[in-house]
Image 1: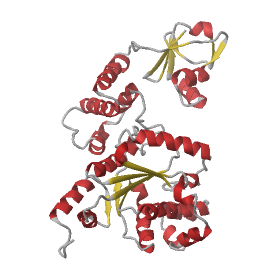
Image 2 (image 1 turned 135 degrees about the vertical axis):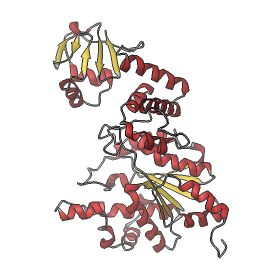
Image 3 (image 1 turned 30 degrees about the horizontal axis):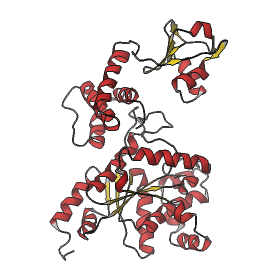
Image 4 (image 1 turned 90 degrees about the vertical axis):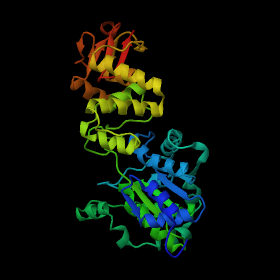
Length: 392
């Protein structure tokens, strides 16, 4: 690099990669300097497999990682099989329950497979932080712990708020930011990506890298995609998510339920080459729905998903390709049937749907929790607007 700073080309490449990011720390110039070094940068994204499925909210930062890949840099996807045992405290108001090792392993494999719907698998370095934490003894852990202070860790807003309200903060949670920071040391990360809720953790990693004698990484944080409710961030636990493995009809239908005001943000974060606001919001939603389905399936499935929506939701007709479900004789427990036949998440969720009038047969709304099989056979059972099954 010259004394005058990064090259014009380095600045241009850095500016292009920073597009749509909320934070670039310390600044775009620092990223340009790394680009000017003339070698592929190691760009890290860490994910804890606390849940198995990826939704559109994950795709914002995964899409940014893909941009770095397409610019010739090395994408490093870190699966936090060890940090998931602690649980990221970001935004938490209470201690996160610990997951079992089998749960973590299953989630990690599913997350990895789904991430390759966005990333180029052949150009992605996938690492599990158990590689280094599984072999870390007490001496290296003590060394790591010595490189940060309690004062630093308690600068986190969520820790401070919980302590002020006399709610517990576990020692494990205090260690979490340090463990995530050490991932950047172990991987010699040049750049780390994350959501805006990760800024504290990512910036701490810069300090820890410095204390290990390394050049600190550049930090880029991406906006949090609002959920389909338009209020809270997209989350499977909140039920306001659109999963990358949802059926095309489910993806399209959920897009159509998004508040009109979110259209510009969804287009900006998911499809920056497109634009919203030039048409009626309903037209924009349909275009967004087709883009989402085509991204994770193909254009034909997107067209069929829209036709399905028109027929089932707009025209209130049953789908033409309703699957069949065989009933045994005797009384049928409707919550169990909804779980088995229509994929409702749990019996409690099924009971809630029934209580809200969201479950119906061709003869009318379902109000009973137990019904005889003889009254159900031959009918189409519907849950919500988009789930149907013919009972035989």
